[in-house]
Image (tube, rainbow, N blue to C red):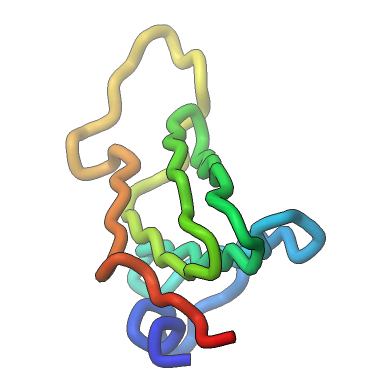
Length: 105
């Protein structure tokens, strides 16, 4: 719960989730426009997580029994866009806070 309240601020709203996947996750947009994605791998093996935001994405290998939080800011790219580049501050950034938290079984 502490991981959620550290990165998802009061007034945030859910922008996506996939509770039926191998790695349940939920994404939030905070009132300041920043985003937070919280994912949990409850399996016994490492799972690949792909995060898409507009025309940018990254993949992360989430270890078994671990949760991770990814945060970024900026507007969603439209993809294609005639080769326009986003300002540096708008690029999707991945930040894993801590190394995730292993859950006690």
